[in-house]
Amino acid sequence: MPTLYIAEYQGFGVEDIQCILESCKIKNSKQKAQKIFQELKDFASDEKHSHFLAYKTNKTNKTKNTLKAKNYVGTIQTKSGFCIEILPKTFNGEKIQDSKKCECKIRFEKERIKKAFEYFSDSISSMADRESIQNNSQSNNMESGKIESNENPPNNKESKKLCDVCEAKMILLNCLATLKDTPFKHNDFANLHTLKFPLLEIFVRMFLDECEKLIKAGLKSDYLCIAQNRTFLKGKLEFKEHITQNLIHKERFFTSSDEYTQNIAPNRLIKSSLEILACLNLSPSTQTKLDFMRFIFADISPSENVESDFIQCNNMNRAKEYEVILLWCKVFLRQEAFSPYSGSDQAIAFLFPMEKLFESFVSLWLKKCAKDFEVKTQESRKYLLQDEENKDIFCLKPDIVMRNDEKILIIDTKWKIPDSSFDEKKYGISQSDLYQMWVYASKYRLESSKVNVVLIYPQCDRTKELEKSWQNKQWTFKASVLNSTKNANQATNNNGISISLAFAPLLS
Image (cartoon, rainbow, N blue to C red; front, side, top):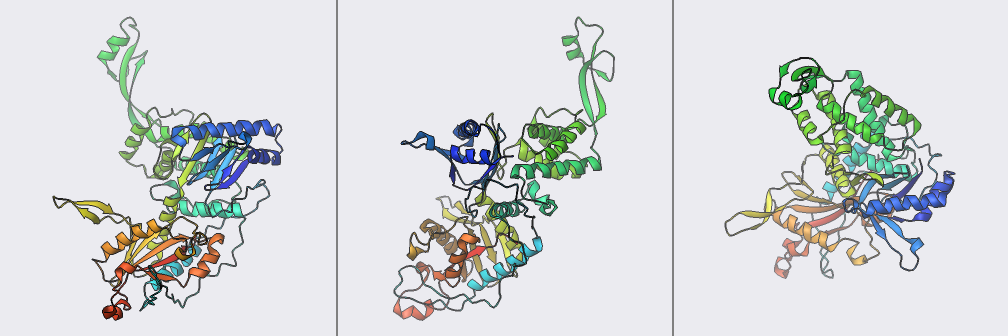
């Protein structure tokens, strides 16, 4: 399957598609590249898909027009079968032409990720445990200090290095595995033997594996009231419909009867999902497995009302075996908050907002690994304003709040690669981010005398140098420090709200 790999916010044009087609030895690659680009352009022009791709025109040279990815990661497949994989921005952005030679093995090992996050959570806690903050009178807004830690980060040298594409895919799969109310959380990615398959192929294989488990356990059947026009009398005669439809057909009977059948709501949803997947361009082995599943469900009709069938599934008894596979059906059949599915005549897309994935990943592992801390996400019990009727308005929802008896840590996840070269004095930190965190911290200061703020960025090859240069950096919100000479001693006694930067490990 010809696949073009790009990173978030990276653009591509007809020439890039043509290079991929030529590397796959596809004939008439120039004409086919034009056709594929037009399909993707039509896809991006649709209002429903405008948040996935953006079309950029070149006024001087129309042949250089490009499509640019946005902040969604995942896969798009055109009607022609060409795939665009949008990988996390940790990917270096090189357009890999030949993934067939890749022999990287998946290394999704929860224990290693857990060890990495145990060290990471300890380092976050140590940032807030300093006894004093150095007072630098020459600084207008921030003061530097030193973070001390007696521990060393886990050594992962024994892990085999993944290629750039597989490493980016692994980061995406690691994040997907932490999403609540999605099928990814229930799947064991270690069962996948290779990462060289396109993401779309991986998703389809996961769904088909769940179908296989369900078939081995046995498809459920139930009694359904079926009303239809029959040539014989069976069940209850429905007089109104019988008179309406059989006024001149005395040999027929419109009746309703309870029948034990497999044509129930969850099976219909699976059948509808299989029909959608049948329109995709898949590898021969995956296609064979898909055809077998469609054969098993051949006597079951597709869902005529998806939402109604999902409601029926919620009210079903004995549906535990269907729990995971129905989550997959939601991904394929419905537009979910975390995983929008969008289809059209030009392309089909399975894409995910990376900011939400990163927040979910950090939150879950901090909950598991943070020692002696209560960790809450999207806490919504504090408000910014109060109206004339004493009603609280403008609810504050920090990404993560870690608290114990001594202190509160306000954590904000930032799916960004900081650029300190843009403004060395500000270390690449967004001023609006600081305003937001100051509001959170000043409000939580009413609950505890010791409040610290931590901004968490992704750890990757592009942030290694920043991590080394910033590991001993800590600042204080100047508005929280007593500035008068008389109270100078108080200012150095942990009286301010400090802010630190940390880099979360994304791989084991």
